[in-house]
Image (cartoon, rainbow, N blue to C red):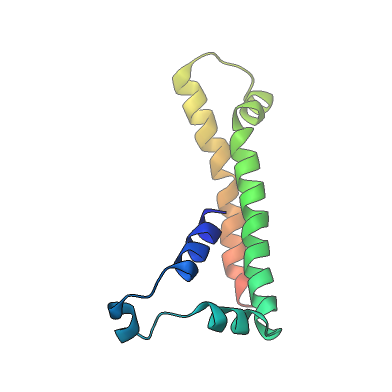
Length: 107
């Protein structure tokens, strides 16, 4: 949502003389022309969709991390023990990430 607000704000902004010199700036018409082409949608949906799924899994796990750790290890009541338990629980994702990196080229 914040990125969409910034893009829309930039598209509505008046062009300054510096912007006219720097032709790198894309206009709203050019942006819509590019977005209307079907070949870009697979990349956009693929990239945005995978980030959405990653964020959904990551932040869902991060929000419920205290509950997950309590279910696995029990409530020790010791802050140092809780920190180590969280470190162990979070390190469980490292093998999955390494396997994903290794499989990335073949997929």
